[in-house]
Image (cartoon, rainbow, N blue to C red; front, side, top):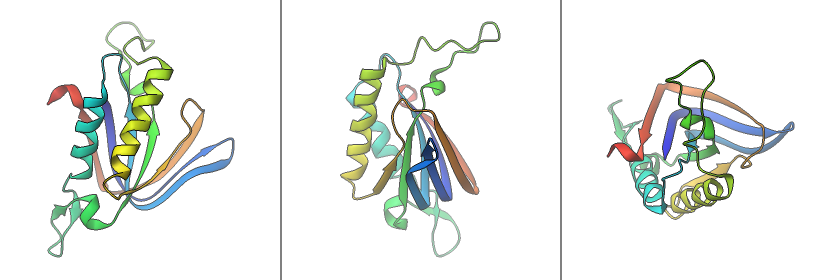
Length: 148
């Protein structure tokens, strides 16, 4: 499972012009599920992201988690994170999980984050989405659950 985490001052996702999720101050997480991911990958990533200390403390240092900062999370499924661009010019997506498996693990990840009392908004799985955000910092972190 791969995640691109961006600390934001605001973020939203729309489907066909309708806003399906919107947050202020927190993370926009683009989440890709691979063919060999399991619920263990979702648990690992939800724990890691919820506890990342990238929000400023009173001294201006990145020392607080999203939980401590009272932030929200916008989670958007994005199979293109699994693109293999090593050969040719057209990315291969054969490592991306089938939609029914990816959707299940995506929902499980969201459930795990919500259990940490983090407010979570989402896109619409499988839809053509427009994501808008204001990256704060900028802070952008990439985590792959297979690289632990």
